[in-house]
Image (cartoon, rainbow, N blue to C red; front, side):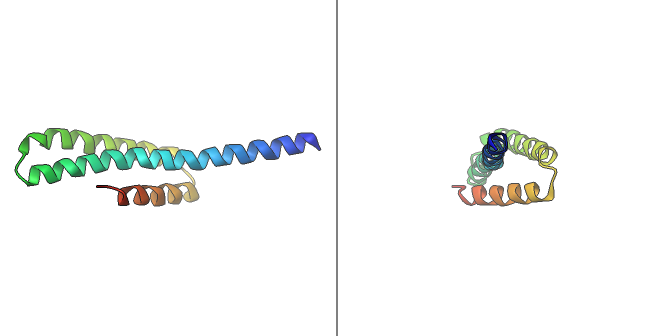
Length: 93
């Protein structure tokens, strides 16, 4: 009985960590995308000096997003990541 209980507790802990990982990964991608968007807006208002930095951040965001696609292979994890990313992008200022 105690072995089964230990396995059940370990499963709960690991699955809850996995969910946090998806949210954390989505936040990282969203942060890069938000910073790139902010720089594009700054460039659109006349400050062209930020174009290179914006392009660099956008490339980093795309590379990280691609890495996450490889990390989350199940359909449910992909869906969770997409939802978490949309939520984080909604916090973009």
